Image (cartoon, rainbow over all chains, first blue to last red; front, side, top):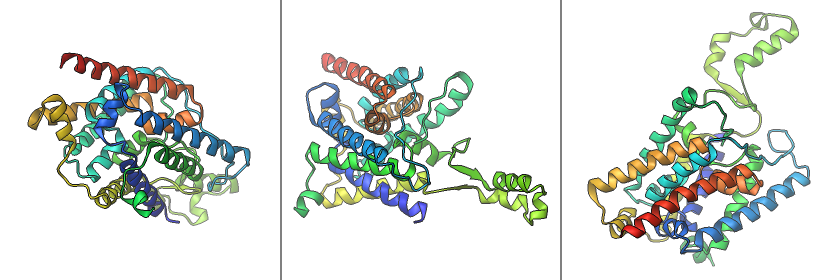
Length: 144
Length: 196
């Protein structure tokens, strides 16, 4: 299957699910950060649980990914940028109610101010790369 | 039943199952961790280095030529033409721009099906909550976006990445990132609540 078609389909499903899950709704983000609303936590724990079991099952079954390699779970590396970056991101998330993926879903849902959030996120993401090259000695080990 | 799936908002446990399956599928297809901050970055500007799954045509040819003990020209290959061809990869690869497009369309359709109206925007919530509109809202959202995007790349992931994928593979790194998210977000919102 063509990569672009596959990716588009995955993206479509993801965008659809972002809206259905309500994770683009500011009220839930706010409720999460203030620990007043269980919605986001319930969602996250369930998703993590299912994904953990799913990926573990794939690994144990010795399934080969389409790229020919055996499927392995990717653990993320620890590096100094995790917490400071996380704090910065959290501030932004609390302000916009958006993360890179959900901002696009917000625009798709026709939350028009989300276009500004998206442009901001895009700007921030693009600003980081040269900043990282110039000032940061570690690698973030992020390949999407 | 169809209405529950297509029209209504899903209960958190149903969304959780759906996303869990999605993350599993994604990681299987690409043998890579799902995360949107890098997808966003690469949809805007291609990565500087190719990942291990891709190999430029040029390198592949040079390698073949070396192993065969001949020059690329003797293989009948024009290297300059190949430069244009770009990287090759085994297995499916993600096309970041199409991911962005897909998410937009999926969200659009989901919202249409749910009968969403344009009114009731994010801005309304910000207005109601913080008494903001117009220019202040634009500035706030832009600034929030910039630090969000910057922070996400510094942390090496956003909630989709660290939150879903990272935690599902039991990455301590992701726990740290998420702790960061809450330190930032909760502090800010608690502060704003206190100031109201």
